[in-house]
Structure formats: C-alpha cells, structure tokens
Image (cartoon, rainbow, N blue to C red; front, side):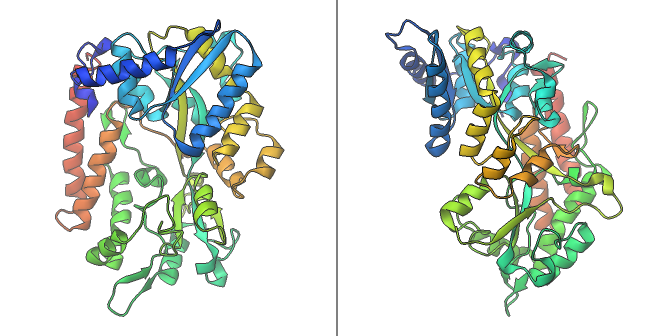
Length: 441
C-alpha cells in the first residue's frame, strides 16, 4: 500500500526512484513539445483502445472549439503512481484521468487542486449531477474532481438459460428469498457433483466487494473500521453460503475454468453463469464476443421485509482531476468544463457504453444508447442505495483484507466471525497508522 510512505505534501514518498522519475519526466517533456502559440494543457489518461479513442474525439472537439488552448492527450500506464510521482517532483500534468476512489488518497497527500472556485466561476452546480456521483468527487466539503464516464452495477441475465417463470424483467425475482429459489432452479450439477452451470456467484462480476451494503451495513462506523459488524457478518455469511451450497472444491474448480473477463470465455458470455452483476460497459463485451446472446438486466433483489433497501448498486466513476502544481489550472478546468456539456458527455458515455453522471439525460441518449438496458443503469445511478468507495485512505486495503477473509471462510479455516474479526484487527491497525503517518492525527 502506498499510504505508508505518502505524507503531507508528499515529502515522505519513499517509492521515488531515479528510473521512474526519468520515465515520468520524459513523458511530461513529450507532452509539452509544441510549436503552437496556444497555451498547452497536458492531459494524462489511463485508457487504451476504444476508450482512448473516444476521449481523443472529445479532446479534438475541444481543441477545434476555440483557439487559445491546446490539450495534449497522452495515454499513461500506471497513471496513479506516475501522477503522484510527477506531482511530488513539482512537474505534474495539468489534467489526470483517475478513478474516484483515488480522490481521498490524492487529497490526503495534498496532491490535488480544489475545484470549488473554478466550478463557481464556470457555473457548475451540484444539482447538475446525480447525487451519488457528486459525493464521490468531494471530500471534507471540497470538490476535487469532475466526472468523465461512470457506471453502476445491475444483474445481467441470460434469457436462454431461464425457465419460463424467470425469462423477463417483470418475472425475475425481486427479493432474496425469491432469488434463492431461482438459484436452486437454474444451477445445474453434473453426476459427479461438479458444477455445469451456476445461476449466480457473488464473487464474480463488478461490485463483488460491497455486499454488506445490500443488507444495509457499512465497512465503517464513523471514524472507525467496522468490517466485523453484525451486518457484515450477515452479508459475508451469505456470500460464503455459495461455496457451502456447491462445495468448496467444486466451486473453486468451476471458477478456475473461467476465461478472461473481456473475452468469449467470460463465464456469462460462455453460458457458465446464468446471471452476473456488472456495469453498463459489459454490453460492449456482449456485442463483441457473443452478439447473439439474448439477455436483459435488472436491479439486484433486496432483502425480504426491507423495501427501503431496494435499488442497491455499486458505482464506478472515471474522473478528471487537476494535480497540485499544474502549470495551467484555469485552462485545464476550461477543458473539464467542456467535457461536462451534456452533448459532449453523452457522446463520450455512448462511445464507452456508460450511463451519464449528469442529472439531466436526453431521451435521445437513452433511446439510441448501444446498451439496450441503459435506463436500468441510469435509474440505479439515481438510487439512494448507490454505493461508492469508503472515504478512508485505506479503502483498497479494506477490499483486499475482506476478500482474504472470505477466502478463509470458504476454505473452512475459520468461522465467518473469526475471519472478519481478524480482518477488523488488521484494518483498524492500518487505519490508525494511516491517520498518524498521513493525516498527522
């Protein structure tokens, strides 16, 4: 984890190396080379392939829309680490395309430019965005990022594997008890007990680390880690029940045969999983690798007797941030503002098979979007049950520790409570260390 060596102002960033700094410097220099009379704004982005080309079209449109600023767009591998390194060296890009779960880490490291004044100057308001996405871009009352393309999770269902009672969104289970019947009905085992088809596996797909929120629980309680609470125990015992249901060895053997996520061997695309939680972008993988697949998407079922927990979904958000020390922060924000225009944002999100982060969405966007279930994803993004990253600087470690705890449960090495208690102890120690080393608390 990087947090152990990241202090205020990045003065204790112990991972700096001459080789990496040289690489960052060369990328920075390449992005600054110009004979243009325009102000050059350097933009580092993580994307490659079609996603990169989609944003390149936005950059080209911005550059053509005015004659003062030229955005130089560069695809960067390992962008989070390189942006931190460049910022610590006083020569960051003007714009960095990062994920929303990095807002907290970068802000705690004093590596970001707050955007509140720019937002007011350029007329950007909180009400312009779906509340869950706006929340992901803020930290301690300050705005640190603007959105590019977002996502939410919904349950994709292979209609071809459904019995008649489950073969449409209207008929599909709405509660967990109904979902349990679906799992028993649709899952198929061979004569030797091995799995042939699983109706659903909670650890596969997008958002498999946030199940406590389905049950109304949380990873934190105020300023304290809380991964071993009663709600967490209920959630992870439910996840663990799938290994118990099908057999630990059988489940592991079944999952080991899954191919790459973005390939025809993806378990949902190959018919091994009848349903899977994923984001709107997964519609593009269906298009690419199994276009004849008959499918639909629905919100995930909610716990019985708790209609207030309807609308559970896990958020994903790509963001644009201005690192501290940017040479041209105002011009950089002019580019960020351009991306926020409804027609520009909808073009980008359509190209990347994503829903829109904006509160206002055009009917044309919803009607012509290449993911036929985009209305489901848009509705879920508006849900008060939408789950984003915990605003603790050790968020990624939380997911790793809890994942390890579930592995221990599935291998029957510890009880669910004991496994979560161990994760709780480790994470609380890490959190106290982070607060002392990074937050000076």
